[in-house]
Length: 147
Image (cartoon, rainbow, N blue to C red):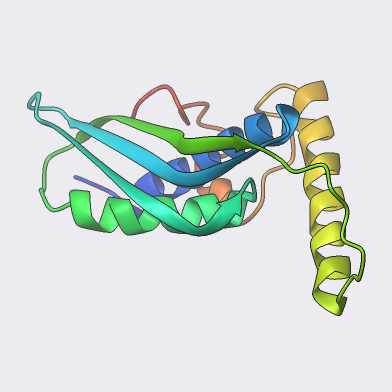
């Protein structure tokens, strides 16, 4: 039986990995590309453009889910999911001269993501903290290796 909630959780874990790698490389993605391979050998691909270049896990996940909703129309087991950043560009180094209240919130989210990236790099996958949808895959060790 195909379990859509588990596949969404795997997509979230993949978005965390892609976002972490983008932040490590100090890059931003203009979009995401998703590849789904089914058990019968059929493979479908799609991509989605982000409203603004980003490395935030949640924005990457939302874009991935838009693609997933278009691609996942069959009732066949999924063998593999691949999520990749698309239109990658370097993160600008220019600081804002006049910061708005929204910029302070973005800074807090950025610091939180950096702290989580540090924890995930320090601890193995089964021990590193997971949140939200990723909890569905916690303990299975299957995120990113195919489903």
